[in-house]
Length: 94
Ligand code: SF4
Image 1 (tube, rainbow, N blue to C red):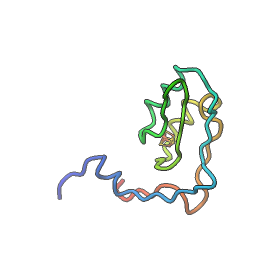
Image 2: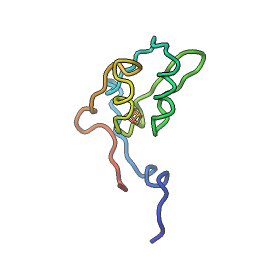
Image 3: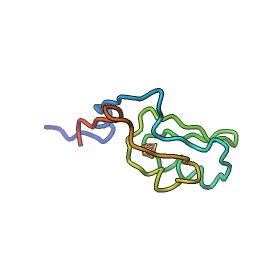
């Protein structure tokens, strides 16, 4: 059996997104560029973006790794919870 790349494994994951209740909420007015760049670079799913001095975020595709919570709770990240039951990511390959 051939070894799978991380990207190939992640492509098999299934996401059940709770559109009405994002499990991560950010401070959209946060303006410390250094702190913002930390979460932009650290998020393995590339869900944070920084353009024209503004941070944006989408919870769709979140891997629930908690990295942004550890790095930036109270800064960029206003609140972080696990998704409601039956929602979130289902990893199919590790
Ligand atoms: S929990 Fe992980 S994957 Fe989800 S937004 Fe934060 S850093 Fe990105």
